[in-house]
Length: 210
Image: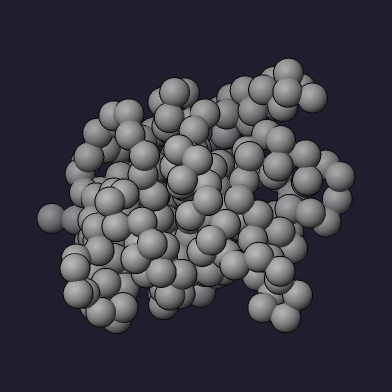
């Protein structure tokens, strides 16, 4: 199973690069060894694949996407991809049915030495606005893990490569831009931290750059 998962991971990376010609733009930080929380805009189910793809292989092996269990556990194939190929931290997004605390699940992964890819909007943004309001989970994660860098990541064009409802991807150039890390400041209120994180992310959008 491990060998099969590694083969599948290589195929996913190769396919993502072939379809999107994706390139990583390290404009605020460098792809150096170290534990991080990457947070990105969310327009497609393939968003974390692109972030994961552009990471150097040594970082990719220790970086886990945070994803909805309600999507990735709906079939045996999805479960294999989510759990075995990507080693995702699978979160039950329904407060009525969840038995695990999502922040504790993510913190446990960090305590194990892994990095995370998460989407603080909480759901895919299919509307005209650049970002949906961030959920509070990232603030609580930062509070529990104040010594880990939190890196904004802007994904550009993937929503056009694989628009909602499309069965076949449209080949287009995609970029994944990594900005300067932030951390929770001692005594910083939740609203202030969320606003600062949103600003750090939106500043990486192409039409927002200087």
